[in-house]
Amino acid sequence: MNTHPATRPQKLADTCATACSASDYECLTELLDEKIRMRHTSGDVDHTGAASATQMMKDFPAILPARQGNQRTLAHQAGR
Image (cartoon, rainbow, N blue to C red; front, side, top):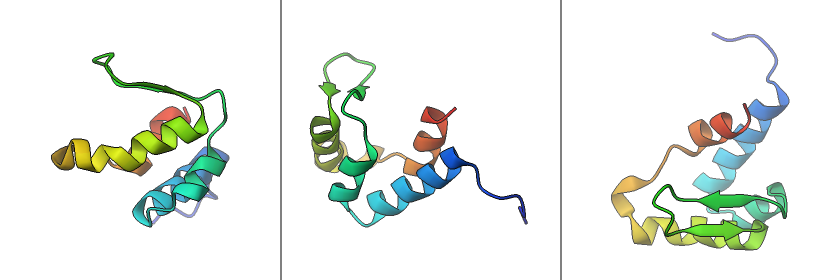
């Protein structure tokens, strides 16, 4: 059992994961900075800004239902 206090990136990752699980896109939009840029490696998807990035997250399950990522893992990687 991990008894160490959570770091700020871990707390952010937990908040993000909880919001994603609850489909709380308003919370996600508030967590994101307007300078955020979310890109897919293929280059076909490129979103800048909190509202645009949140819309991409809303659309993602419909576009690729079998490829839903582990949001906590993704947030931890981004917080490094």
